[in-house]
Length: 493
Ligand SMILES: Cc1cc2nc3c(=O)[nH]c(=O)nc-3n(C[C@H](O)[C@H](O)[C@H](O)COP(=O)(O)OP(=O)(O)OC[C@H]3O[C@@H](n4cnc5c(N)ncnc54)[C@H](O)[C@@H]3O)c2cc1C
Ligand code: FES
Ligand code: FES
Image 1 (cartoon, rainbow, N blue to C red):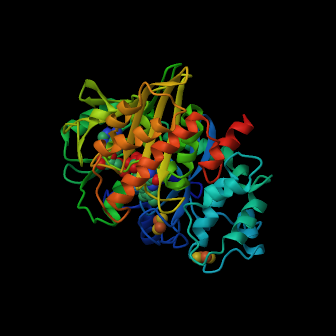
Image 2: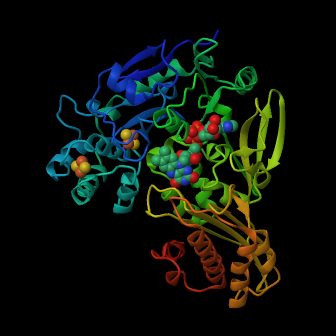
Image 3: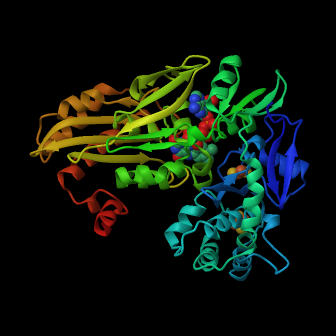
């Protein structure tokens, strides 16, 4: 029998919730049901961080603390976690060290964004990293807006509270919390509701496959960083929800010498170390992919499954000859990622089918990777153009080229004319770079929208071809990159 409750830990106690609307967000439950109003609602779309809370989970016998946007996370997705909100930090010893540092550094002005900032910093203080630097703090706070621009004292407070931190009450009761988590290790499926309206969270892939076949119209969610917005902003009348986040097999990362595979439950944060090991440019994209909160919930496969023409991963994975594995019932099939996107909002996926995993081919020694994300704002912004390059150079000649772009068509797409225009040419020759850039004119006819005009997109994409080839040819990256990040990384190697 499936369990008919959403069950989690709150303030040291197990809580079981039944009889909920499957669309209930964690924020609504906290504020409207539990009446914990310390957590605020700002944008209700994952952008401002006012609603940040922390979820603790047991992983490999240890507790991990991750910040999430409660406004777009559904209550069902907290099953098996401990919810920690701003009300929970102070103890009989007084304010938590993060809160104290915020007070002492005069870091809080309006108080509206402060609870979310405090929770992000609380998660940072529990990240297990000993020496926290300014860049860690900036990256942590990219998803927390302070509208009165009081960042300097907030960063001071963060550095003070999160570096070389002493144990807090959460460390003191860690054993007790881990003991409570043992209650959630069972392999039962969760099904809250009835045939018409439900939140289902299967524990096994066989149950997931069965449910999707039985209810092909149900909405599947992984991190819900897209679907959450359909609910809060689109007011989508969703009645049946299936969450794949409890299936351990789908959180698998498989790695061999030549391939890397991410299951459908692998979040961007979990994938980060593997992607960063492929090339430093993945690190740059990751720090600019949403925010820590979005990366902690959102999944790599969800970024493909949503079929967005401006998702960051599809171009990066297409150049790595990625394929996706789909499953319907007991049958599975593989599709090359570049063939998965058929047209705008149309993908090679049948009703009753879901994506199991994405498999990437690792680049070889003679392959050069370049990834460039073009946005209006450096952090927390969706791409106007996303470009990815894998250029193979042997004895000074380009022997293979994979160029893929997002934001230039209704789907993420290979630039085959640009690729053909440069294969066989010398990498150091500036006319090669120009030939590649010209090739794009045959590959794309971009549209104008609120992110960028068609002219801008085409111009920037052509410049990116030149930038990628110039960098690979050996032009110092300090003249092609504002922050010189690639050079800094190479210097550190
Ligand atoms: C504030 C904010 C910032 C963001 N920034 C970025 C960014 O910088 N770059 C970027 O590319 N995206 C960004 N996104 C979009 C989003 O976070 C990502 O696309 C994310 O990877 C989606 O994954 P998810 O697991 O949350 O998907 P979900 O919301 O759970 O699902 C998305 C879609 O995919 C379907 N789906 C999910 N998993 C599967 C599966 N296994 N099989 C079949 N269908 C499935 C769902 O039914 C739904 O249609 C941002 C979103 C927010 C809210
Ligand atoms: S309310 Fe703005 S991120 Fe949730
Ligand atoms: S302190 Fe809240 S917006 Fe700056």
